[in-house]
Picture 1 (tube, rainbow, N blue to C red):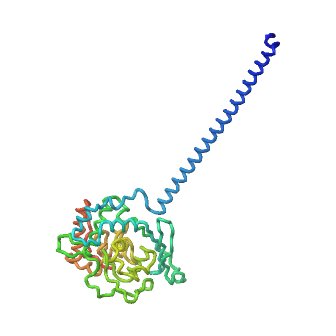
Picture 2 (picture 1 turned 135 degrees about the vertical axis):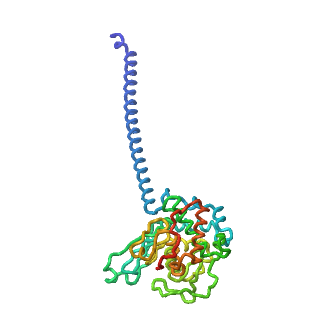
Picture 3 (picture 1 turned 180 degrees about the vertical axis):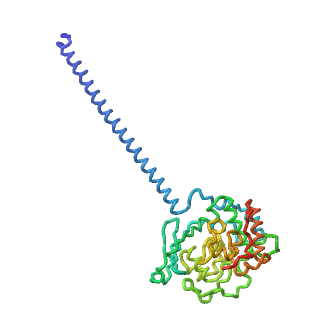
Amino acid sequence: MDRIFSNPVNWGLIYSFDFSFAQLRFELSIAKKTQYKIERYLIMLKAKFSVVLICALLLSLKCTSNSGMSDHRAPITTLITEKQFDDLFPMRDKFYSYAAFIKAVREMGLIEVKVVRRAVSVYQFTRTDKRTGKSTVIRQDEDWNEAWAKKKPDSVYSINYGNFCAEKDPQTNKKELAAFFAQIAHETRHGEDGKYNDGLMFLHENDTTPVYTAENDAYPPVPGKKYYGRGPMQLSYNGNYGYASDCIFGDKHILLNDPDLVQRDPVIAFKTAIYFWMTPQTLKPSAHDVMTGKWRPNTADEAAGRRAGFGMTINIINGNVECNKGEKMPGMTDRIGYYKYFLKKLGAADPNCACSCGTMKPY
């Protein structure tokens, strides 16, 4: 041992060995620190990823809640294919295409309207575009802020056009679609009774001489314009054209100024039919709420013989002409025939159908 330390060469070896060992320890120390840093970085990265994932999930849930466009909502194409549509309307005018109907349903599904009513007929409408989330007041009646209008509590309801034939289970949705198709088929038919193959043939009423105008503060008629029946639901009167235009476009003037747009653009034509089907009126429920079971008759309705079912949709659409006139009213029986025919074609059933409005008082 002494010889080793007494030899200068050995001192160099010892120094070299000692230096190498120190360097190794230093490098090990650096490696440990680096490993610690890497582990910390990975932990931080994992935490950040978790936060991002949670935020994305919450944002997704928020968007679904706000828009009503839930992934659970079955698209209209699951209820009706193009082949079925052509089969239901074999004699239809080419204006009424399957593609136009589907596009109308999808685009209307991006609209929601909140309706607030004060007193009997003082309204405020707020329209929300689900694509942007932007809400705009599209109508506020002149008397909205009057003291007398504020005396009673406001009544509030929302019209989610995305619920058209999509709010309930598949069978209920098919029943609603059959009812909707029955009504637009009858309104636009031009063929042989009892065949139920002649729907969607007319773009507008045969007689276009009546102007169909009525006094309406919110939707006054434009001089020189006629508001006779157009489109699948034969939209009539300036009040309906203005209201439909507010809901569809967020601008009442579009259809009030140009009612012919309903017979020039098939997508807009179908949108007006969906608007009429989905939108309650001052005294009447929407046909949609009736067919989905949301509407329940109150005491006054029961006294007037009104009950939930297809017959009530006839009362909503043309009650003054066809309802409370017995069971052999031709218009009513034709609508019922279409409904039963379309139910069968769509693979749906309505075994306890309250189909007639023969003893219902109109509004």
